[in-house]
Image (tube, rainbow, N blue to C red; front, side, top):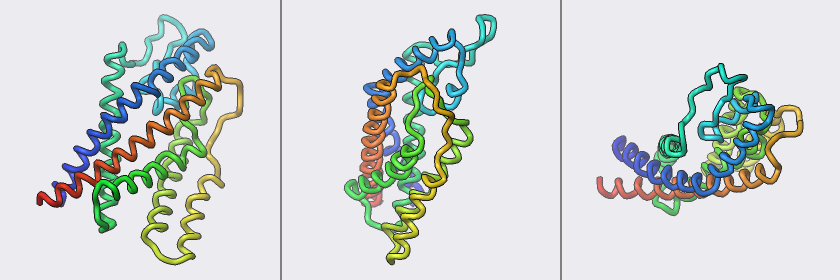
Length: 241
């Protein structure tokens, strides 16, 4: 069983990671590179507080020093190195999510297969992206953002609460439990995500909107592919065993 889970997660994650890398290269990375121009130009090339908080979206943006004498933090040098690290990051992240998804499939005791895997993938999409995005939209370099630890804590709480709520909805009978699940989904949003004071930013609103839509679509396709691959290989290795 353990070998079956590990092999399924590695293969499904690697395939989904390569696919999402292609989506990033096609849609999101060009927008990130474009936004970095505004981040660099604002304030004469200084690093902004929010730049540190947007590292999870920028795939390695630069941290600029206050003058030429101050050494910059390391960043990928050139497009090849940047793309290579993006690919590595996408594949590793996809494999990690594949282990989570396949572990949940196995613990549920339900039948697998690529069709059911897609349903599982959509649930992962809802828990790990859609629900947190209602409070914390995807951010480009140069956009204002709240303190990183506060955003990470809210994101983790929201994802966990939504995942538990979806499990209750699908696997627990009783109207009362459905009400509890709805409450779990709503609680993080009632508490509210951390946000900085609203101030004019360097990044044009049109660019931020394009990035939000592109991320929504690319991430959705990633979770559908990850779920389908996970269900397929989990089922295939079971038949082989």
